[in-house]
Image 1 (cartoon, rainbow, N blue to C red):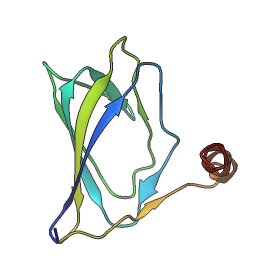
Image 2 (cartoon, helix red, strand yellow):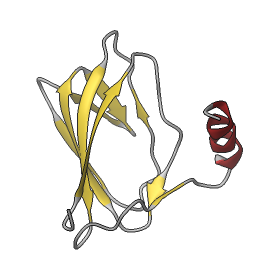
Image 3 (tube, one colour):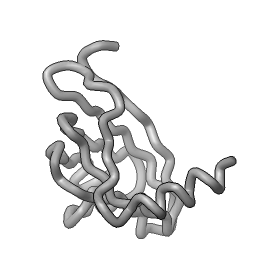
Length: 103
């Protein structure tokens, strides 16, 4: 795939990501089931199932619901740019700790 990237994610209740942003990639979030918080936006499967995130916007995703949220992220910028996610200052230690847990 050279034009865009697609990921499907199952996100358990009460979980949130750390903050991140992208160098160039914009993202479109499509919620299939449940509810996610995306920055200041609440994205629901029934009433508002999609949201867009600009590349340079620092944000995180959270599931405040009581069921798994299932959503798809479509990202790209003038074609697929690969994984260009970045961690903002202050989040590096948290990310290192998460990677250490997976070892």
